[in-house]
Image (tube, rainbow, N blue to C red; front, side, top):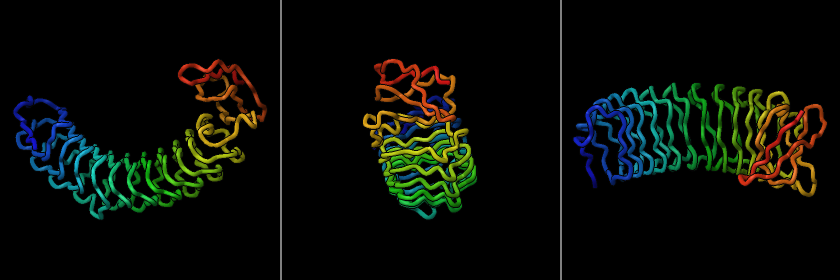
Length: 307
């Protein structure tokens, strides 16, 4: 066990990196008074101890330790960011008790959380990382309206539920779950990006698709055919061809792969693909095979000249 010797640090220092130092306790006595950010990742810390922590602290990294529960007693009142991935934190009813209202970012992925409790959550939270936990249901009850980004990658979610979701949610990551179909019912209208790769989706449903969605990822699913009927051609601007290639679409058998990118006109865009040619379906329904250059070493085609 290693105890922190704060005397080796300048009193005016604002950032300190103490990662991989075999530290087992968060002892703050003698800590520089103007500290803003500290990195404790990859240590042996088992308890969150904030006693004597300077009020100046805004960001703390506690990833890859042995922490089993959230404890906010004596936490600095102005803390805005905490990263506590890869610990042993499980479901707790009172996980937010004592949490400073100033918190805006919480990354708590790679833990043992099976159910998300939002009651008592800081009202200004804008970003939360819950990837690689044991969550099997999307629960939005009491979720703060301020939330903009949520990461639920690598959980056990089978169905997408939007009821109660904050209307201002803009980005959601649902990669590597067990989702079979996309249901847009009650989806927040402000959603601009959704990542659904590595699921069990076999077909796309566009009914109720949010009006501001501009980026959609569907790679590594079980899509065997895709229709863009009902897709809002004036709003969906990024559906990556390689995402569908990673599914089971039989391009070489059908020979014509249709990538629906209505706003690609007169733009130059790099498209990652592994086909001999790329076909585009334009809004007027006419197919164009345009200037597709040779595949580069990085695996990208440069596509230009689309009208």
